[in-house]
Length: 113
Image (cartoon, rainbow, N blue to C red; front, side, top):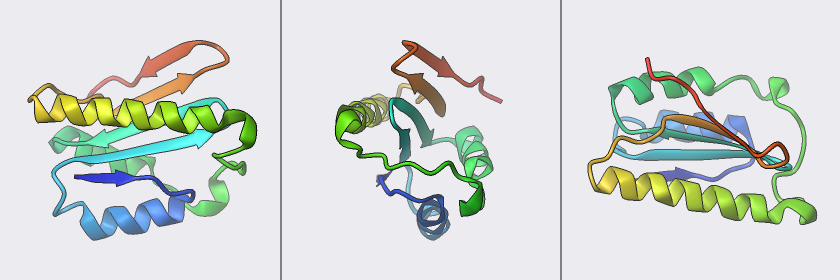
């Protein structure tokens, strides 16, 4: 199992390229203020989808993920990723790509396929 909890897309890309063939469960949380993007790669479809979420570092939006006023966002992200792990361990399909906007109280899951 691999949990990718780093601050840059460059690091995510390097880690994915290094371990994606060996890891059966991949989880990645991307944070900015009170917005989270939660990604898992656990089956052929999600493994094909994940590399499409990687992009050059200059295209990323700047902003620390651990700002004092939003540290709880990281805690929520950890909980969501552990939830995906428990689903995977029980043989329940994981959600491959979710967006959570805390200010708007919105949770969006991308469609599979």
